[in-house]
Image 1 (cartoon, rainbow, N blue to C red):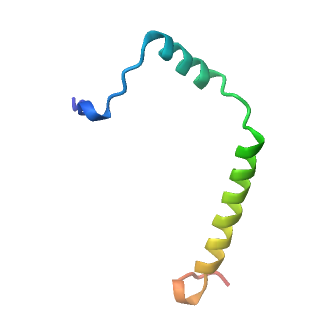
Image 2: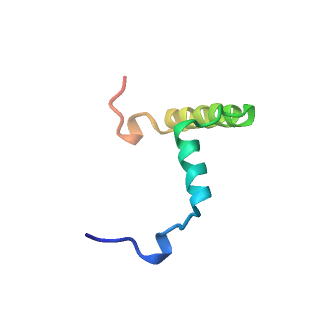
Length: 62
């Protein structure tokens, strides 16, 4: 079994472990800023995909 090297190990106190598990079990609702950022990202990704589509990119879409 390959264990990660020490530089990839995060050591948490038992209190921090409990907080992490609780956050994973019941994550908070996304903030308004996070929702805006996700929407902006989705818009930019779609815009970038449109720019790369076409005959010169090898796309077969009509």
